[in-house]
Image 1: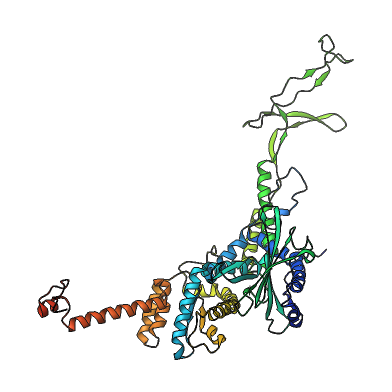
Image 2: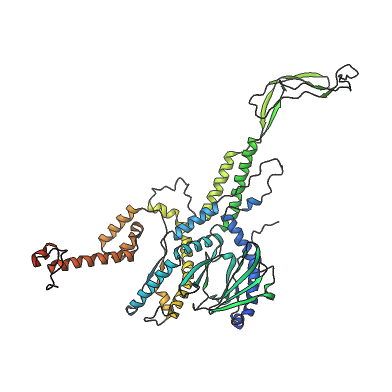
Length: 547
């Protein structure tokens, strides 16, 4: 029977005709009925895949359900590796170990004031919403499940914007069926209650204009027929100009970084578990003795009612319990002696020499090591993850050599970066529209899309640092006079850990301070010059007539 790991609809992108949506867009109950159809499908077909992938990240792979050896007395280790976690953490650190840098550039000189206001709003928003950490968690979900979600929202009780990462097992976006596949609405559903008591299912449906909140009693969407008893709690106007719940994709297929390698991960877990079972069975192997034990118990003879030993017809005592070897499991020495064994039909005897050995099966440890190393290398190769345990992956390798080892990762990173920026544009579009609606942005706005286009998110891969080589390169490039000071400052960011803009501000402040000192010296109002010009010490207040 052919094994299929996930259902064919486990990664389906939800779409529907825009005309159907427009007909119920402002009818909450009608919209809920459509949204519930997607929710039911999401719980039944998509969430199982997402949960299974999360199990692998948490080192709870298929091996945990392995029935084990048929012999119930054999060892039954089920060891699941943390390989998936290793790959994900490596990818997250490489992609977002350095925070995304947002640069605001005005499209016209007249928009400089608008650019300054936008940059300040964006900086404050990113800091207050913990944007850098949320981006890392989004990338983590992308690496595991192939999809991720964030939500732009206003804090309850004020109008300050905030940002949240949404669990992909509880949310999805429905798009129209056009080529552009523009989002129509998004759904988030979750339970509230006290542990397993008083469970209430909460539903949130986001459109570009409203947030509709519903609830039903009884549990999961596919278990309590919420279409019949859903209650609309409130309709909240939104001011984002778009659906504020944004979906991110890891690639066009929405697959995790190591999802295609699940078979290799399972094979590695089985190989390691089998070796662990062999080692444990070896430690508790059966001891086989050939010959007679020198130490035995005395036989127990059958007795009559008076306690007399009973005998057979030949006059020999009747043995009720024959003698047996005296063996203790903690004994370190066993005494054996040879014995005569009758062989053949003629009653001839053969001397059997004593021996003592463990009964174990032979295991090809060299073959096992070769096999596991093969699996490990295959996983690294097909997930484009560098193997830091590779002896050729040296810390002192040249930059060219390191680039070749990370070449495969860079190819995927380029695609993932483009998709991440595409979704970031949706997040930024929602925030900019909100700030314009609140009049936080006022000056020179002609086109909202142009304002969003002024923001450029820049990604810098987090690679092992070689500060000496970077410093030498900066010196060489400066000598050519072909590059701007801003480019040099951007190159120096990994060394100084100071952004190019912050470094420019420091340079400006330093030059202003020097200009002030020069001005004071030229006017004689500085140091010894002040003493000669007016007879006052530098910290001495001037006379009233001087002031």
